[in-house]
Image (tube, rainbow, N blue to C red):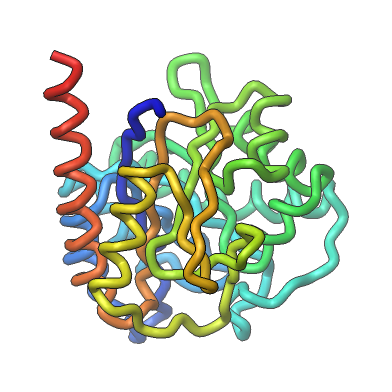
Length: 260
């Protein structure tokens, strides 16, 4: 069993106008990757600007978190969209974020689809190739853009086919079915700290995914790294992220010592 390096990511900037979803600045202190909302499920120009500024202040790598155009449903309702239409939908949103990245002298690190389209593209090779191809559009020779998605799905296949670095993602605050399918809910329920700890330690120590049936599925997709997501709209998000970060830091320290 090869060592599994880990990072922590969070979906941020998901408020709107005077309304805030969580303490984005506190979360920014506990993560490695920030997936910043681009306006179609949440955020606006003021929130996007501030979130990017916080990312720079805390040396967090920034990714775009584009969505289906579904602000009312927070991007968590499925929609039929042709591949070429989906590409334009994503280019529009990622382009908006890149304007703020340029303002603060930051480069785009990755793209991670949000909500319903995350699940749709994981199941469809055609849609997955569409969204992964957007990474090519915003990549440069000096700064290639990675894609964050589900290992062993159309996400990974599309990234490998198109030559885009794939960053496998696993979720600390969502459940997985007995078949290993991620269960994406519109409203996230609170998760007890012990449950999160057990899930994360199981993943990093044994390379196994915990399911909602109290069974475990091997993570056997030939990967040696994973980024662990803590959603900002899950109750207790900051505490969740702090807990996951502490486990990840311990895991990565152990790996660094074993390689000396």
